[in-house]
Length: 306
Image (cartoon, rainbow, N blue to C red; front, side, top):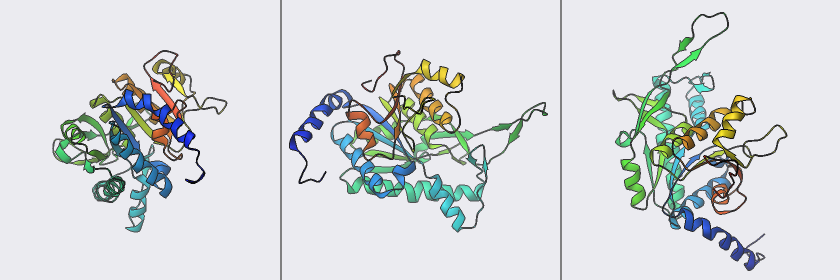
């Protein structure tokens, strides 16, 4: 529908539906993990940037944590540096870590900042090394086959996990009307840099900020049941049961566990949303239906209104 043919009554209805959500979430923090198609397709990139600015304008404090795996892979290929993976994680030696920092902390991060600023926002790009806000430790990867008496510890280099999140810098920026945009690079006590999964960083940042919402943009419609139907509202108990019985498995499992841990850690709700839909974050926050799976600490009555 074009601007010329849009029914003004529909515009009013949309604004009216959004009003109670604006009132409810004004002043609250929403952490958004940005990646997937939403980060690589031009119409989705533009809609994401506009969403962040609109959220800030109505009083919500968005904090963006972004990925950049495909962009890292592209540059490594151009530099003739081989990419190797263990359990889905990129083996990161010192040379590869230099590329990761250039791509995540430079190219990708500043590109997102620029887009938000072009849409009228005030974004500031950070890595976890700025203000030592993401303290990291090396991730230990274990491998064990049936014939082994003890698991093998595999060294995958500068791949880390979150040890601690310092929120002082993020809160200062958000309080001064800036939108923090964070690259998932952490640092340990000795100053070594680590590449950390962006979902995990987003979850830990949401916990540390006592965020109202954690929103993980994905390339799927949400968490689905055995019949291929999207499960729109789940409690943490229901998610635990679905992990235990194998309903949740494969590539979706780490993302769901991240969302689950954040809610158990104090975040009011976590959302697995379809980043292939324009303005997905606004649809999830400001409409009754939403566009993905919501996880809360509530009972079986969990809905998108939570």
